[in-house]
Image (cartoon, rainbow, N blue to C red; front, side, top):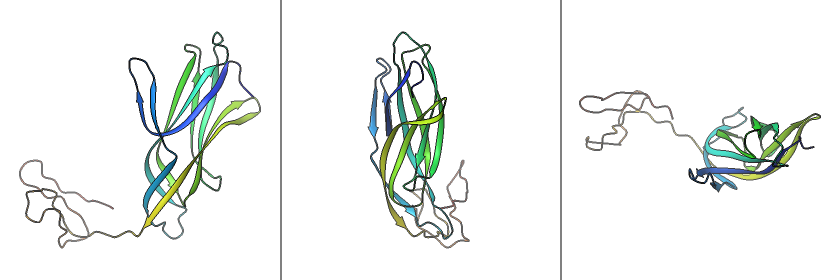
Length: 188
């Protein structure tokens, strides 16, 4: 069911968006497959939060260019089992312009296994949320065993032994010379 005046044109999953300032045209680098390298899922855990740069872009337009409208929408990320991983609520307001692009960022993706994940676009009607688009993206994972680092390492390329792990007490410490040198703990 369509709300008066507002319709969905498309939904795209992208990892890069470029908007031309002069024309307002958009260039999208779409994502159809994610190739991730992740640590093995710990026993008892449902998955790993993978750092991603995915954004979901939707385009909405006036059905009648002379009749403005508003609409509540949402983007849902679903795993291969159909479980909801994340949701982004958006308000489309076409009272001042005949179309609107909405962008939802998802900087982390909960991954428990490989498979086809889904980006679902929905609109809110009088009878609840209704799907208007379902876009698949395939997630491939190279699962690796975590290795704990212990010792100290210098990040100065001019220091003797730069980048090599030395004996230490369970931390990776940054060492430097002169002003601005600072130590810190790195958790990997």
